[in-house]
Figure 1 (tube, rainbow, N blue to C red):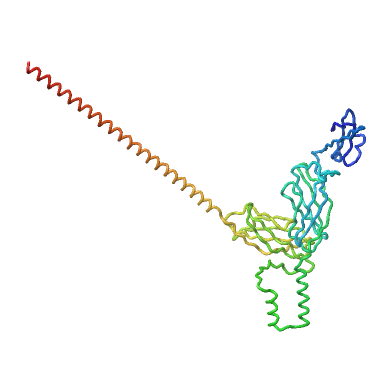
Figure 2 (figure 1 turned 180 degrees about the vertical axis):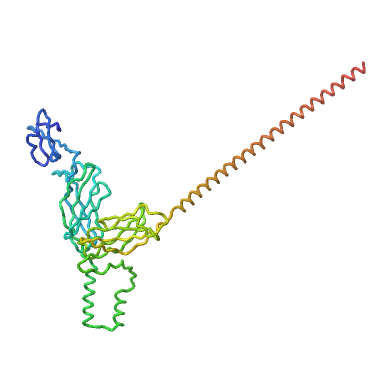
Length: 389
């Protein structure tokens, strides 16, 4: 049950009537009972007299429910990527401001995507909270994909958004290849001398020094080809593996299997399945060599292996030992310097104190000598007086 203080009347902001048999207006209060998920929204309360009409708005949120599905999905694309954007349905649209309402904290999203003719979906989880866009990389050029977004929070998974379809841009390489094929056909009709062909190739290439990316494997007729361009990048979590999707038969792909061995023992360390074309390897032994291979598993159970990648995990043990040794050496030198300064200060203090004591003892001896000389003279004077008597 929820109560609102109102002036004279109340209605939902979007113009829908209040839920029948579940609301009561009495004494300037609106009471809703047996709350439903559809009851959340912005309510408008107003009071009217002959002079004017005043209104007040309040928003009702039911927090222990799963989030609503995202809406208003839009997209743009390049040759190999599509960026999808959406809005959370927690935004309640009003006539004055298109974004007025309560946005749940810590909302997480997962983008589901696939080729329109593929049977299985792939997922991409957005790691940053309350981020409402995602870019899906390494897609096939000139192909149509299907997208939908799932919202999540601590109360669980919400509902999927409406599906949208969007295509990647056609590849320019294909156009160039087609023009090259057309040129080759024309050359077949009008053959040229080898020297002339070589000169034309030099003119076409010019002085550009372009390093071409790894070439994809040759096409496989009506079958799934192998993953290619396998690479590994060292990061803070370990090693990030990445590979390109098969050139042919991607609609036949079920999932990938990542396998890695420790060499030269050829000990199988781990095997994992993934729907993505990347995987994060963690906790690899330092100073060891590992062999990595990706398997593409087709719908009929066929496994197509990629080329093998070898990585050498650097050892940080020597670095840590050198760092600890250097720290201990520096600490020892500091202690020795402090001890030397302390001893030097003590020696100077003792030398200075000894000089003062020597001066004081010299003055005392002189005083005692003068006193003794005075006593001797007085004694001799008394003896002379006695003899004269």
